[in-house]
Amino acid sequence: MRQPVKDYRIGIVTPTLSASEDEFRGAVRVAKKYPGMIKHISLPENFQEEQETAITQILSLGDQKDIKAIVICAGFSGILPAIQKVKARRPDMIVITAPIWDDPDMMAKYIDLCLDTDWIKRGITIPEKAQRMGAKTFIHYSFPTHMAKEVLAKRRDIMKETCERLGMKFLALNTPDPKTGAGSTPMLQFLQEDIPRQIAKYGRDTCIFGTNCPMQDVIIAKALELKFIMAEQCCPTPTQGYPAAMELEISEQDAGDFDKINTMIRRKAAEAGCTGRLSTWPVPVGYFFPEFSTEVAMKLIEGELTDIGISSLSPMAKEVAGVDVYFEKMKPDLNNYYLIIMDSIIY
Image (tube, rainbow, N blue to C red; front, side, top):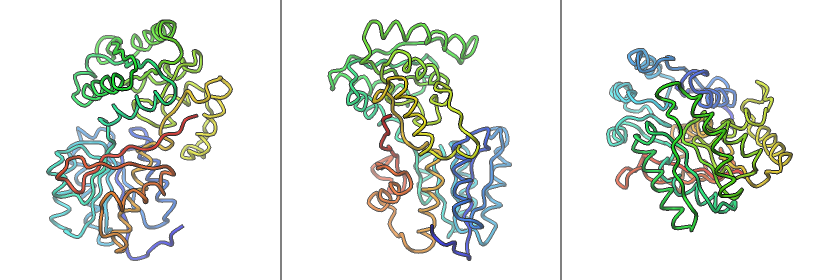
């Protein structure tokens, strides 16, 4: 472990534990890794209604002279004004966002490094992985209000194109919409009833993908029962769907120990006869980003890193994640905004 450097600190900004567990726990992990060097703050629970409070919190980090970098792992839009003010006061302040969702071109002007998941490219990587796992059919479950989102609709279309290229059958099926009517209950009941129908029709070499987080508990539970393929959840992490579907008992002490959690999942998959049929990313991206961003910030502050190109970032990311992490520019002309895909673990 690197010995703490005494003459600076790094501020890490995340949502609260209840609002976004992975980012919060990721920041806590970094604070334990580098005692005394990390100032971790949580944004207001209701960010959209308390943006001025959030801006004030971030500005307060910028006012502390020993803080040389700010890492923001929040997944909100509306944070850029705070960064602009910090940069106006402290042009030397290193700012890394992983992610925030303001205008990319504006972000790239003020932020040293912007990071996010490559949500669109997953339209290629998920079906390709499903085929490697043995899938001949790919079923995409969603609902109208989700498909009204451009990024999700575009990913679905790319999934269809990828399946056609690979010679896999693709089906896009609608569930009841949880954003209208009676919430998630009708959607989950539909999945309980429809997934067995589809597997009976298309067989076990079918990959089921759902675009909504609450779907994952049902999909994975049904995969354990029916032995179909679940290549990746909407948010790829060992802690989405698996703990509930497998009734894993994860102690507070083990909540961030993904080696242990992945071992528990692999054991449960084997007991259910599903070895090789379930997969995800080995570490939540929200947990990965705070640590990786802090390592980048430290190297920038200490002069060990002068270039934030892909060739510099990739080996650092692998060291943190334990698997290869692939970076692509968000836009060809943005040299400090990257989207990532992480290698998978197959249980």
